[in-house]
Amino acid sequence: MAASAACALLGPAMAPADSGAVAAAAPHPVRAAEDVRGEGDGTLITRLHTPPTGTSIASPARDTLFACKGGTLTRPDRPWIDAHGVIDVLKRPFVSGTMHWHKYLKVSTTATERRFKGNGLPDHATGRFPVQKGTPAYKYYAEIPAHGYPNAAAIPIKPWNLDITVPRDPAVQAQPTCIDQLTTGMALAGGTFHLEVATDAEDRPVDPNAALPLDRCWGHPYDTQYHYHGPSQTCFGSKHSRRSANTRARSRHSPLVGYAIDGFGIFGPRGEDGEIVKNRDLDVCHGHTHAIMWDGKKVVMYHYHLNGEYPYSIGCFRGKPVTVSGSGHGGH
Ligand SMILES: [Zn+2]
Ligand SMILES: [Zn+2]
Image (cartoon, rainbow, N blue to C red; front, side, top):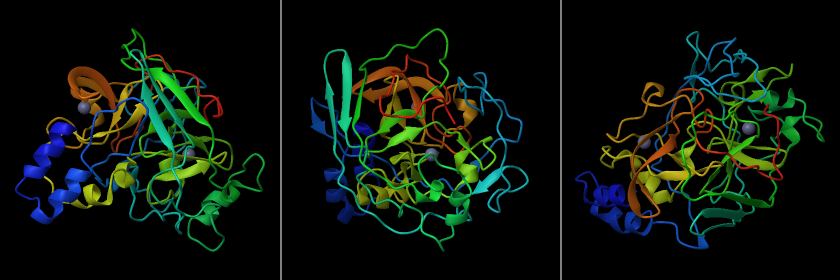
């Protein structure tokens, strides 16, 4: 975070012309009722490991997630998934088009709580939703039923009343908690993170990253709420910080990109040594504990990571999740 931005500025790979821009985008601790901006190191992960058909989502385990509803995953038959279950993101079409939004997100803190109040819209452009007929993504959305719409391709993005309060310094619970809501976290970029389970045309649970084209920011709307799936940090942060991501010294932990609904932080894909974290480096909830920057202080604390191995984001909750009003329940 603050430390990594400072080191990135001093890094030998950094062109001097970029320094000012990166300094302006440097992460900062969250203060009371502050307008926030999504952070990100722009790392684009192009190969995702999706689980095989039959993978249980009924109990906490590595390489899967723990949904209260239970069930098993079906691996969809898609041209961008190889026989080993590797998704080639560059072969998967993106939802095309460009839409711009007026994001509103305020994060305020008390001694014990952190409150997010916003309109759920992102600070980056999205693909065009409803998904347009004749675009490569259309048929994959059009085959999925959607409540209140002819099909899932017809769902637009709309603002909503995002008002979520989580513990400011959450405690690790003795047992992990299953996921029973669609919203699993809030991104500083303005959208939310969703459960990494969708349903296919036959109502079977599937990995959304396997089944569906997403937009270039790895997002799409459900019930008009824009949310992310997978290692979605590519659009987080300023253009300058994203552009410099490929030249920046890669020896640092990724920045904070959001908060889970149990209050723990969600970070990009790089661990302490700057390498993309593997699931074997993480626990069953897709997180781990080491020193991180938290509200401007270095503390040893649990946190989640985004990476390229299912469930990509949150697998279960290490803290106590809060209930998100105005967001879907029940999982799939
Ligand atoms: Zn989704
Ligand atoms: Zn970490």
